[in-house]
Image 1 (cartoon, rainbow, N blue to C red):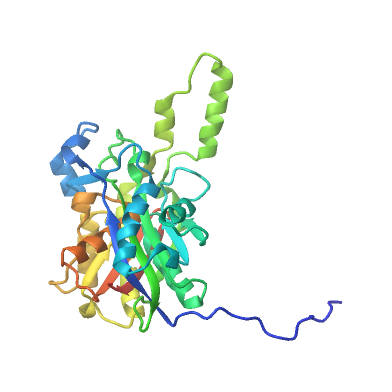
Image 2 (cartoon, rainbow, N blue to C red):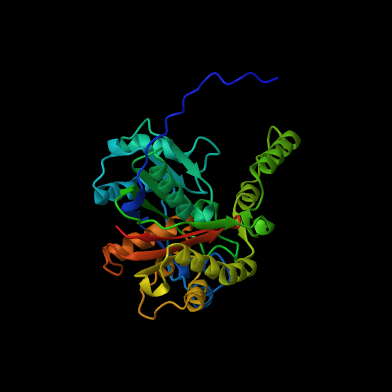
Length: 357
């Protein structure tokens, strides 16, 4: 028989803010520009074909020694400045990425230390192209739930490190970069409800070609058979650890399944498409963006992020990078309402309406 509980009082709960908002954003784009002409020296393709299929004209690639932490730091500093927040005022750091090269530890603790916020909870999340929207939702819930007051959110990828330059299906798609946002308390609703989910039945449509465990077993087997004089074939390892994508399947899923998710986010926010000031979808493919605009029946004059033309697909970094540029260039209004939606590997997705800082 269970004994009676010892305590008779109630637990304390951390008081949170009623609402949360994005206080400031920042972005970082690596210096190296990779044109379609350069890509076509690796694969049998053409500038015309790449533009027609994806809308990509060029993309940015990080330097060989430039890490996701380096890029995150470069994006975080202007975001903190824009938000009027110093590193010692941060309560948490969340990094959304799938290209931090270490299985463990995460990138976020090192980033927090570099910024001068050592000691705060810092962790990575893996939701690929939907990662930034996931992280915004988590940060908002932390602020409202009382576990944090100000949260630094980073979407960052070094996809060039996991791209097989000779794979015709992916070599032209991916780019590198980092986007950042600071989420804090608000006196009014400024981050709408998140509509998110996943579809594991299509888990294999975007994935690393082989798991690290298989690669390690192959290394061990080859080393045992060829030691001590033969080296492991680097080309085989390079291909095995690169990303693969079933392009047509992903395209169909995004075109037909993501517009309803975006509409649900609009409805959940209690607004209509006419109330939106800007649409910032994940920069996966220009044709996907055009299809979503049509299905959502967005006003003809609404600004739409089309950064993919010059950034390529930067996965978790694409939405914050586009947000930062549109605000900086005056294409999106400060204080305006933005519909943002991320979708990709997993297959994972997330969408919400946010008030721009």
